[in-house]
Image (cartoon, rainbow, N blue to C red; front, side):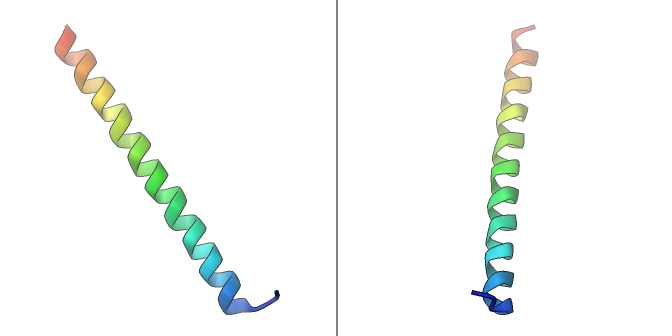
Amino acid sequence: MGDPIRRGLVFLLENIRAGVSYIKSAQFIELICIRLLNLK
């Protein structure tokens, strides 16, 4: 359980997942902003 390599890999995976979800939400917000600007 206390394997530092395994812990490091899990840490990396969680950071990558968080980064991907952050990028997706940023693109989603960007899309909404573009659509709102096009409506005006």
